[in-house]
Image (cartoon, rainbow, N blue to C red):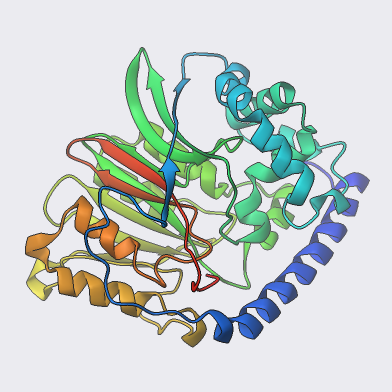
Length: 361
C-alpha cells in the first residue's frame, strides 16, 4: 500500500470541488433547457448508407501494433491527430481541469501496464502535459459523463500482423468504449448515473486500495484476451470496477446478447435476449431497464417504438442505423454511431450531427 502524498491530497480536494461544481451545472442546465429543445419525430427510414445533414463524415482507420513497445503504439495516431488533441486540450479539457494541479502526475505510475506506458508515450508525442493526458484516460471515473469531442478514430489492434480486435476510440484514449472481437463478440459501454460514482473509486485508488479496474482498461483487456462471449460476460460481470457502468455485449450465436448492469462492486442484473419471451432485442439508454427513465431524458420509449415498428424479420445494419438516426435517440451529445456485426467482424462508425431542433442530450 502507498501512503497518501500531499500532492495527492491537493488533487483530491480540488477534484471533489470540481465535481460538485460540474454536477450542479449539469443538473441546472438539463432542467432549464430541456423544454426549449424537446423534439420527437417519426421513426426515420432510408438513412443508410449515411447521408444528409445528420452525417458529418466517415471515421479514419488506424492500426495499433500490440507487438510494439507500449510507448510507441499510438505514435502515428497522435501525430495525425495532434492538432485536434491540442485544440481540445487548450479550449475545454473537462470544464477547465487546469484548475486541478496535475503537474506531478503520480497517479500515472500506479496505473496498470501497458496502459501507463502507453499514456506516457502519448504525452511525449503530443507535447501535452502527462497529467492532462492521464486525466483524459480516466475521464469516465472522474466525471461519469459521456463526452463529445472531435477526436474519433477507428483502430485495428493487431498482433503478428493479424487483427485481434477493432474499436472506435478517441485519439489519446487507450481504453475502449466501443469494440468488436471478430467472430466472438461485440462490446460497448454506457454510462450509469449513480452517486456512488467514480470519485469513490478514485479516492480508494489514491489511498492505495487498488483491487478495482478502470472501466476503459477492463473493456480493452476483455477485447484483447477473452476468447468467447461467455468468457467476456464473466469478466465484465465479476471484475470490481472504480465506477458503475452498463456493458452491452453481443455474441455470434442466436440468443447471445445482454446488458450487464454494474455497480462498482458487483453485478445488479444481466438482462439477456430471450426468444421464448419475445425479447429479440435488449436496449440500453443510461437507465436501469427495470426503472422508468427520467421524464426529461426518455430516449428508451422512442427507440423501442422504432425497433418494434421495424420487427425482427427486417432488422439489419441499415434499419438499426435508422433507429439511431431518430430524434431524440440522435441528439446533441451524439458524437458517432457504430454498427457492428460479430459474424463478419465488421465495424462501421460515422460522425454524426443533430441539426436543430434537437434535444441537448
